[in-house]
Image 1 (cartoon, rainbow, N blue to C red):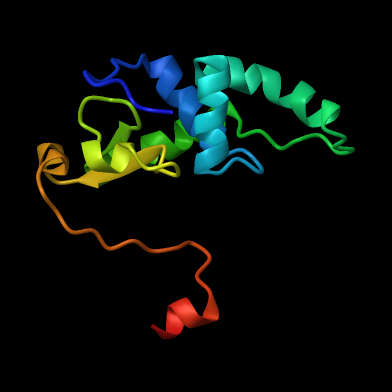
Image 2 (tube, one colour):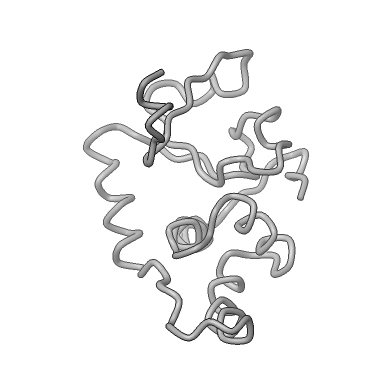
Length: 135
């Protein structure tokens, strides 16, 4: 899925839905982008997830991030002066936006306009492998 060239103007409700979607069980960046492509919005994708999981043979209910958990996460960013840039928004780095597993969301501390400039990134993992930690 390619991002719009002019950037989206996402509503607060859609931003919250996108955060909920990426924080839901078994939803990684590639699945996130495929769901957006299929349903058009994260809100519609969230509504469809339970039936998709059930139709896919899942026995247990899929754990979907609650609105309150997503709201709490966003509220915790405010005192830290951290902003968000969602995939597809105008401030999202254009080259990063074109990779298949582009992060659905970036957390920015500092000057967000720098994301559109040439840069070098250091990427970490929440679940680093033994080799990764050693490096």
